[in-house]
Image (tube, rainbow, N blue to C red):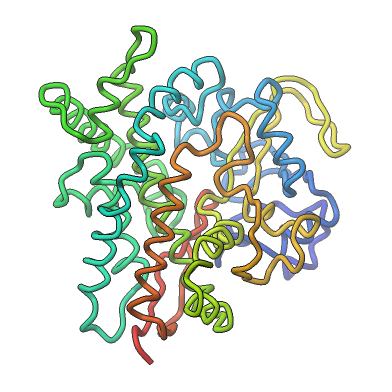
Amino acid sequence: MATREIPVEEVRIADRELWSDGPPLEEFRRLRGACPVHWSTGMSDYPEEPGFWSVLNQEFIHTVSRDWQTFSSEVGGMLANPAKFFPVEVQNGMFIGMDPPKHDRIKALFQRGFTPKRTAEHEDTIREIACRVLDGIADRETVDLVNDVAQPIVARVIGSFMGIDEEDDVVWARLMFALVSADDPNVNPEGPATVMERDLPEIVARCQKLIAERRAEPRDDLTSVLVNAEIDGEKLTEHEIVMGFILLMTAGNDSTKATYSSGMRAIIENPDQRQLLLDDPSLIPDAVEEALRMFPAFAHFRRTATKDTELGGCPIKKGDKVVMWYPSSGRDEAVYEDPDRFDVTRKPEHQAFGAGGRHFCLGTALARLELRVMIEETLKRYPDMEIAGEPKMAQAIFINQLTTLPVRLRP
């Protein structure tokens, strides 16, 4: 039976068959219209998992995001995926998986590395990296925009920010992608548990080595800032630095790569919008925001109800899992006219970096800068780029990204 024929109350939005080509946008649309706070009875791949609430529009995601006392990031973790594959204690090691007051203390220390001045000073480095990669493919007829362009640029940008040697970019990118796409059978055919057993120990060991090097010999990089950051005489522990490092490396690699790749696909597939950007490059920052609205890099974050409550007329019990779906809220008809249309003049307010509150992404300014530079330099060199094969999406319910986008650089 086609999914559109399933009654709304029987839809299980995290079932894998709905995610074969990325987030199930049509199902999200149906649910937003019928019940923007929706109950799924579970997940087909994990029959032991309890049901959960899906939050699908901007209004209610905003409500959940700002009420950490009722909707906790720490209790139960931050992911809809089964905790056995990414243990809650590991999630709680990252400040995105904490509640105040601990979250606020640790995030404040990390913010020392993301000051506006430090971010702005990185623009020349970002542009040099983007130009080097884009110039390096000039002699080729076709490339994979995800793996030949986006990945090497974003890996070097976050690597240079963190103080990672360039020769280690490839291995870090591989490890981070394995982590965020743990439930994608095409990436981890052995199953999500192998990521915890095989990849996480390597990630931690590499982090610990870098931390030890920076303690002995600080440099002008973010890792050195984290090692030495101090508030009221208190520093980050090594565990806090390691887990925060993993969070920043994940976001720096996969979030920017995802939005750039999907954004460029939309630009190519909408020639009128591309022409607007070519005629007036000052619109590129608006194109970045539109790409963030339509193609948020992460499909969801989870909260857990700390008490009986109500949302959108639905009775939520203490302990219930509550999942916020950002690809849905970015196409909320109550907020956007013609939400499935890519429009570089829209100037949207979106939730791709979170919906306010304490968990708003601290790397927002860096991500916007990086995306703007990447799109600017791509269009400058290859204004007539064409799709040259079938784009493919990840099949993991946490990430919203292309795994391949074949393009012909010139017609």
